[in-house]
Figure 1 (cartoon, chains in turn blue, brown, purple, green):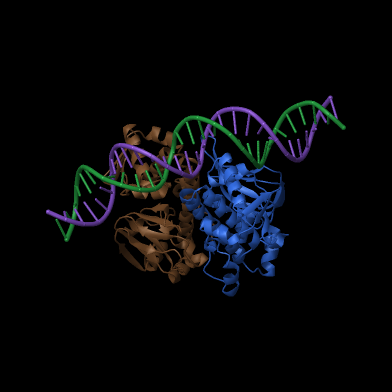
Figure 2 (cartoon, rainbow over the protein chains, first blue to last red; figure 1 turned 60 degrees about the horizontal axis):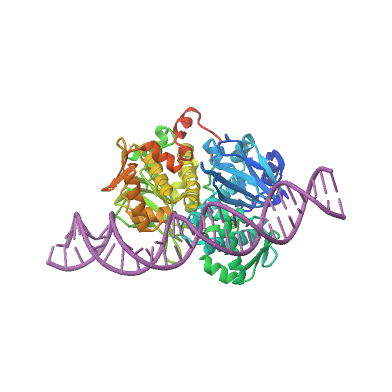
Length: 246
Length: 246
DNA sequence: CGCGTGGTTGAGTCATCTCAATTACTGTGG
DNA sequence: CCACAGTAATTGAGATGACTCAACCACGCG
């Protein structure tokens, strides 16, 4: 289980040991449980072991914007640790497990394990690239395209995480959740999904997505997976950049 | 001029020397000139000396989404350097000057100048926090609130950069630019700005914004400057975190 | 003088939202 | 075993925010 954490770097044995010893506790979260709240002081970071989390913001008028979905292998909390406090919350969408790394151990990791720190940084950078794509998604695309794009992204990410089976992947999210992620009302999400189903693009039931026409879906979404930087593992193995945050 | 680059860290003399020697060239950009294009390979990073730049994405259908505005002291290109290629473009909004740091020098900086590398990282982290806020902005707020929020953010950032004069600050952006940043059409931006003017909130002329009712503006925008992490300079000076990306 | 850019206006259309009600399902207590 | 409550999905209908198209105006510049 712990082996999937660092998707990016090829770790040496010593690194693995350090990583294992750095993990403070594995926490089990129930659905809808918050594990990090906006305004919290820095408290180390965490890695998702399994399940599905999301980061989000609540606006003063009560509206909620989901900022990202976190699946197995994703990390969070690093930014908050460095900047001093968190500007967003993180919650479990379904029962999930995370491995926490307390701040003190994090320092040790950064000091002694360049490959691990590198993996943490890169994971964060990729998440930032995803954030940028989301700005474009909610800013420029219509409902149909937004949801399509979201589905494309999740499909590719689940596939990269080895969690998809053919054209199907698990995405136990409610329509309200899709709305909060895409900046749409529940009703409109519902009607748009129906249209996508009628168009033979996808079906979504029991928390599982089935993509019937991947190419067409990516086409209407204007999806280009470049921003997910899936090729990093490879490049990384070939040429272990020394420069990194050390 | 070069002194304003690292807004975060208090630099030692040695650091300053290293920084100066690391700077490859200062480039002058004319309005609308691109200095980084989506898909470009890694090429080091740069610091804005003066002027105004923006990062953006062009969608397949030709629409443009502005992802961020970059003012004096902001950096860009670090993420691309580490991830291998860029997922967005950067262009000058008005004639501007930037100082570039080639990739090789960047490595030296990371290896030898922890405070400088720390400043670079933090600048990037704050920009990512801004990205998250923008997702919420375009996702959940209406036109009036979006533009208000954008104005609040730019006001605070210009003020923090020492570039504002009282209630006025320079923001030489076209209404089309505001539209591309807020995910709105030009016409709607125009009408919304007129309404804001009529409501006595702001005026915008000759590339200068005047805020007539700051409190009310921040109120309608639901603006909370926490995500800009303006307090970092101070905290930094008090307690120079050792753990950092070293 | 004429052109190009940026700002402004009018009018009609469409996407999306809100309100409100219905259905299906699941877990719980009696 | 059934009634009930709560959540999620669905549907209808009306309202409106935002868009598009198409002008027109003002200004600066060659």
